[in-house]
Amino acid sequence: MSMHRCAARPWPARGNTDARIFSLALEAELLSIAGVYRTSENPLPASVQGKPTQVRLVPGDDGNDKLVMEAML
Image 1 (cartoon, rainbow, N blue to C red):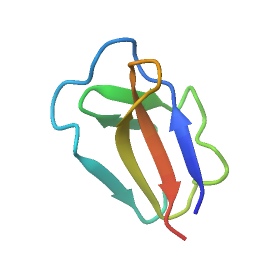
Image 2 (cartoon, helix red, strand yellow; image 1 turned 60 degrees about the horizontal axis):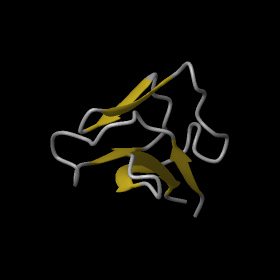
Image 3 (cartoon, rainbow, N blue to C red; image 1 turned 180 degrees about the vertical axis):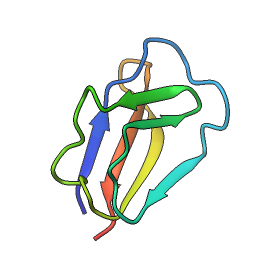
């Protein structure tokens, strides 16, 4: 299983921070959980591009929330 962390905005997430995104073939232009987002301006890593993927939110070491993408196969 591959995992990739995405940089997030510099303030805490708002909304359901326990939400998950599941995709059978990740090709999103925008991913967002609780206001923490990633756009297609920052391409998806090859480890998850077009693959079954789970996206979740985790607290970062620097106090900022991060989107984590994990390939499910």
